[in-house]
Length: 131
Length: 131
DNA sequence: TATAACAATGTTATAATATAACAAATAATA
DNA sequence: TATTATTTGTTATATTATAACATTGTTATA
Image 1 (spheres, each protein chain N blue to C red):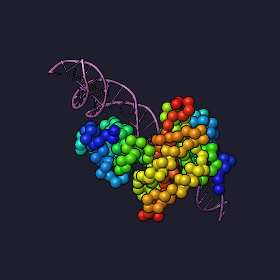
Image 2 (tube, protein in one colour):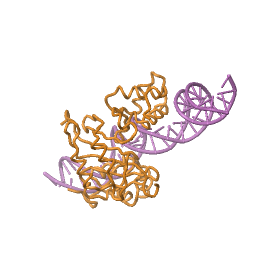
Image 3 (cartoon, rainbow over the protein chains, first blue to last red):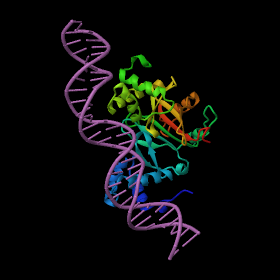
Image 4 (cartoon, rainbow over the protein chains, first blue to last red):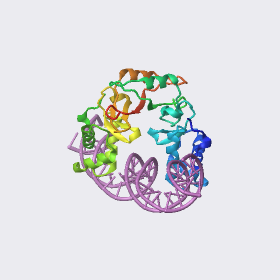
């Protein structure tokens, strides 16, 4: 099921490596700059890798920041159910892995009784350091 | 507290009117195209109005779609705590107003005990029609 | 009513983010 | 091997968003 790193293509590995080495989300053009020494020259090469890595859950996109972060939560690799806390001052981003929260959201029903197993939640506030 | 429509500036009113008339989220350049007959000619005029309208809660940005939707939920006008359901097929977007959900999320604590009163949640799935 | 302070506007240019399209190379499978 | 699908490389361009600055309008109050 879960695609392992070994099965990634060359460019996908290069892009994932860069993102995994970063503690914080990386922007696409920053990734591009960083992988140019590895031979990736043009945006589509990076965006294609990003698309695939998001699809298989190895990374997530922080939508409000247009940035990409490595997934360190094996549980969400397949589900595409993600939650993050974002510090509005220092832009520190942490993935939240709370089975309680994910259960609550997966079971949430809207007014028409619809459920959603796919979601993205971004919390905003000030982190410990910035408070 | 809640800023009323009367107190909006000319451009802010024009942009809000367009968005309120649309059942679905509108993209910035689509708004720009629509307000050109009203004299707004350049992106900054639209983006400035959008920024302000988001700030005061009259509209929300659907981050995953880079689009803007009018707020029909007076409760979130100030809080900036938002939730949406998005149909991945027809792109229909609905704002979710569930006091249960908002209470749950406002009270949620991460591993360090942090709370967040500001958040954005986007649920993805297929709407009734598309299922 | 002057005038200061601030908010909003108009304008040009450009930055930042992302995709279309197509040819060539590589890998997987029958 | 022949076929199919995936990945890559490449150029060009589309889409989303902001910087910078001069001007105008609004508000508050001295």
